[in-house]
Image 1 (tube, each protein chain N blue to C red):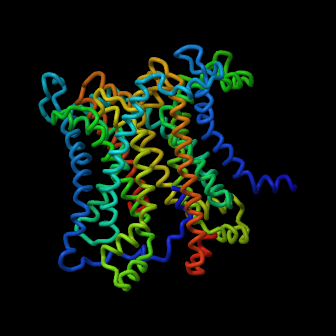
Image 2 (cartoon, rainbow over the protein chains, first blue to last red; image 1 turned 60 degrees about the horizontal axis):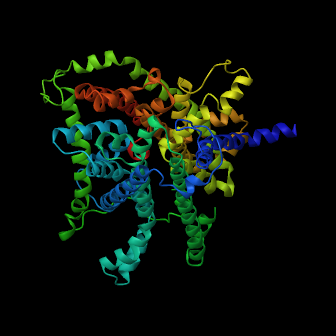
Length: 279
Length: 304
C-alpha cells in the first residue's frame, strides 16, 4: 500500500529524470569521444583513451579556421541583431504607432517559417540579384533570423518592468537621458544580455540557412557536415564539449549573480515583492 | 532564460497599452526605432519569399547558366509534388510520430519541473536547455555512435530479442524519428513549462477534494490550463522537425529522406531552382495550414 502511494506521488519525477537522462546521453558520448583515439577515420566507436585531442585541438587547421569564422559571424550577427531588435522592442512596448499588427506579423513569421524556406528564399534573392555568396551573405541571413528572437526576449523584459521607477527618477529632476541611462537601461540590460546570448548561440549553431547561403565559406557546422562524409576528426568532439562547458558556466554564473543581486536587493524592496522572490 | 525565470517582475503596468503618442518631437520616434529592424526583416525575409514565389513559376526548361524566365509555370507545383510525394508525406509522418513521442516525454518532464521540483527547479531547467549548447550536428553524430551496429544499445536489444540477430537501428526510420524527437524536445518543454509553472496547485487540490480521480483532474484541470504552452510548444517542435533534413541525412539512408533532403539537392546539387522553390512553397503552405488551425485556438500574442 505504502509502496503504491509512493509510486503514485513520484512516478512523474521518475519519468522526468529518465527523460533528462535521454537528453544527456549524447552529450556524455560527445564528451567521451573527445578523449578517444579512433581506430580509423570512419569509426565512430570508442577505441582508446587519450588526451591528445584536448592538448592539440587544432590538429586539423581547417576545423579551427571554421570555428574562428563561426565566432566572427556570430559576433557580427549578434551585435547587429541585438541593436535592431532592442530598438524594435522599445518601440513596441513604449510607443503607439500605426501598423502595429502588421509589424507583429513581420516579427512573428520568421520564427514560424521553416529555416529551410528562409534559406532557399534568400538564396533565390542573392542569385537573382547577382550577389556573390560568402561571409557577408551568411552575416545578413543570421541577422535576419536572430532579430525576431531578440525582439521577443527584450520585449518580455521591458513589459515586466515597473514604470514607476522611471517616473520617480523624472520626479527627482532627472532628464530623460539620465533616466534612460541610470534607470531604464540597467533594468533592461539582463534582457538584452539574454537576447544577445540567444542570438549568438542561434547563429553559431545554424546549419540549414547557412548551408544555402555560404558559397564556399565554411562555418563550424558546415565543416562538421562536410567531414561527416569523409570521417570526423575527434577534435570536433572537443569543440562540442568545450561549447557545452562554456555555455553551462555562463548560465550558472548568471544564475548565481542574479541570486546574489536579489539577496542584496531584499532590504530595500517592498515586503510583498520579497515574498514573491522567495517563492 | 532560466536565469531570469525567478526575477520578480514587479507590479508594473505590463498589461496596460502603451501611452498615447507624445506631442511634438516624439511623434516620429517610434518609426525611427522601428525603421532599421523592420527594413531588415522586409528586405531579407519578405522580399526573398516573393523572389522564391517567382522562382517557383520559372520556366522549368531553363537552367542557372542560361538564365530563367518567369513563365508563370504553375505546372511546376503538381509536377514536383507528384515526383516527390513519398518524401513530402514522410516529412509529416516522421515529424508527427516524433511529436507524439516528444509529448509523452516532454509533458511529464515539464510538469515535474514546474510542480514537483521545488528548489531544484532552476537547475533542472538548465538541464533541459544544456544539451542544446553542444552543436546540433555534433549531437546528431553522437546518436550515430549510440545507434551503431556494434554499439551497446543494439547489442542489448538483440540480446533481449527486440531486434533480430542482424537487426539494426542506424539507417532505419526508427533512428530518424528518434533523432527528430531528441533534437527538438527542448523547444516543446520550455513553453509547456512556462504554462505549467503558472498553474495554481490549489486548483488541483480542489479537484481531488471534489473526488475527481487523478486522471480526471489531469484531463479537466491541468490539461486545459496548460493549453497555451502546449500549443506553442507543439508548433515550436513541429515546424523545425518537418523541415529538418539533418537527421534523415546522418541517421537514415535515401529511403528515409524527407522533403528537406530533396529541396537541398534541388538547390545545391541538381540546381533545379524552379522545382526547389515549388517544393519550398508547398512545404511552407502545408506547415502554415497546420499553424493557422492552431492559432485559431490561441492568439498570436499568446504564442509569442
